[in-house]
Length: 220
Length: 220
Ligand SMILES: Cc1cc2nc3c(=O)[nH]c(=O)nc-3n(C[C@H](O)[C@H](O)[C@H](O)COP(=O)(O)OP(=O)(O)OC[C@H]3O[C@@H](n4cnc5c(N)ncnc54)[C@H](O)[C@@H]3O)c2cc1C
Ligand SMILES: Cc1cc2nc3c(=O)[nH]c(=O)nc-3n(C[C@H](O)[C@H](O)[C@H](O)COP(=O)(O)OP(=O)(O)OC[C@H]3O[C@@H](n4cnc5c(N)ncnc54)[C@H](O)[C@@H]3O)c2cc1C
Image (tube, rainbow over all chains, first blue to last red; front, side, top):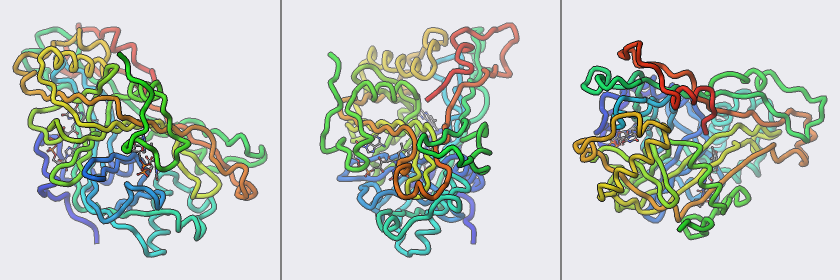
């Protein structure tokens, strides 16, 4: 069963810049698939902690992982996960109308610590394949000891929101247009470079296609 | 007076991957200067909220701004601001040793709502110039009405931490090196593209040098 459109709840309802909101789940999925690092927010001793971390996902859940010792991976506590792509600067005629073109997603929920061994392995596979497609079957998979040292958290994708801004500045038809100033956008893009072999790598080990193929492709 | 080295407090002390920590304030400043979007974490009704937002800084403080209506810009409450640059994927011989090359900074504190008109204007100038150098003096500056509709928060850069990972995977001299697998890094870079004029822009308005000049330069 797949999840429906993004819900408007007390947590996800946009209060500001509502016109940039989207309730289309496909937008959420596209934003999550375009990146692999999220910012995970938790409350520790009453204070916010915002931790950058790698994620993966399936249809219903987002997965993050880390050391069993991490305070940010406690599980069973409220979390907010945000994924942000910056597409460019919006350079308007007035400073006030300056802004950013972006796609961002926010997921609210209680993360669940994954204990079932099969789900844990599958979650780690999704996470690895999300960041580094092809590596799960190429590299050595986790040993029992490594699995035990790893915490995997699952977060339902149910309660999520999306915000997107695209296009030109908004003051092209206002009084500021008379100022005769240049206005437009300055696009920002992110791309994968040429793979750099580990200096310790014997020269006869060739780079596999699934890694070489990413060079020059876009990220974000 | 400038601030000293990054302090080791209960909030900033790295508990995990300590070798990636830095107490050099110059590292913090370089990370802040390389980007212009942070993730601002606050606690609202006991739950974390992680909001992407633009920032600027001076020697002692970080500035963020937004609508006076924003819940995330309340001021006087604990915040955690994180700035993250992703430099590449670390592709190891084992899935467990996979990771990310990165530079990240985390700032803890209580953000202060800026009320002094002069400081507010200066903070907005720093923020605008940080994201879009040259635009503060080129574009129309904020009117009184616009200033009144804007909240500016200042956050001391005192209690901050830095984490940096660079270089090859760590399993080049362990037993996994025997596996005969390729290992290395896949670099990720972000760069400014060609400016796109607002379709509403009269064709005789030429692009100013301070904007044109950014094309092809690196971000992050
Ligand atoms: C792009 C990226 C991807 C990452 N992916 C993962 C991942 O998939 N799994 C994983 O476990 N870790 C990952 N990390 C590291 C992660 O951000 C945390 O540093 C790590 O999880 C330790 O978290 P903790 O809750 O145990 O922090 P603790 O060590 O308990 O945090 C204590 C204090 O250390 C400082 N600190 C912690 N982390 C950072 C940081 N990143 N930058 C600056 N200061 C910091 C803060 O002041 C914090 O209050 C990634 C980091 C980056 C930048
Ligand atoms: C790259 C970037 C830069 C930005 N720069 C600024 C800035 O400088 N100043 C500024 O005021 N705003 C900025 N924004 C927008 C900012 O992220 C918030 O959307 C906005 O500040 C409203 O915040 P709020 O606390 O009033 O949210 P509210 O509207 O009260 O939030 C209610 C709910 O709406 C949803 N929501 C809010 N923001 C987002 C989001 N970004 N993505 C997905 N869901 C969201 C969440 O579910 C949240 O719980 C930026 C966004 C991006 C992606």
